[in-house]
Picture 1: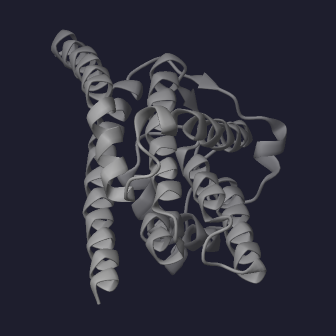
Picture 2: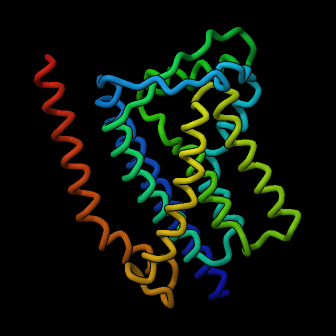
Amino acid sequence: MKREKTVNQEQTFYIKAILLIYLTWILSFALVGLYASSLPSHNLMTSLDEQIPLIPEFVWFYASCFALPFLSLIIITDYHRLNRMLLGFVIANLASFTLYLTFPVNFQRPNLGQSISEYFLHFLYGADFISNANNLPSMHVAFAWLFYFMCRGQRLNRIGNAFVFLLVVIITISTLFVKMHLIVDMLGGILLGLATWSLALFLYPLLANPHENGSVALRQIAKKLAPLIFLFGAVISLVVGLRLLTSS
């Protein structure tokens, strides 16, 4: 009973932590996108991008990525691997935000029809920024691969691991079929996911005690990274604020 209570407490902690990270990410993503969408952008669309058809039904796979953090809590047995995924996610965002602001990428999105999938895709287009903001690399793709790396060797058997791999691959290509990203964005997202997972593995023992409970280790990471994240956020806020003041 005591062990079950501890597990439930750990899961409750991570649900709250994931929700907090989500909220922080949404605000940060919006702030960066607000500024990036006002900058001169680069069109990296290739002839191959133009040949990729719009398949609106892939929007459901694309949207499934938003549920992966909570799916992690069902799959995970070693919370330190979940911590590494979250650490990789933070690192990936710091790298992505820097690139979004220094090298904005644009492309033209297609006109949509009136199917249910296209209505949902229209909603996502509306919730997103204009197409020259927050594209390269694709954080959607980067996080999907971070999730896959985390899942390996956990609760799932070989069939389960194969299913997760297939899901991540479909999420990856869905970014092209729903015209949310270009090929270069997708490839950049895959490389970013691999690089930040590897970096998180290296940094983890420097930031947290791997012999503590996962929740304790995550608090240690948050405490050590808080000054860096705060400084990065303050710089971004200052830049965006000055841009808005000078343009008004």
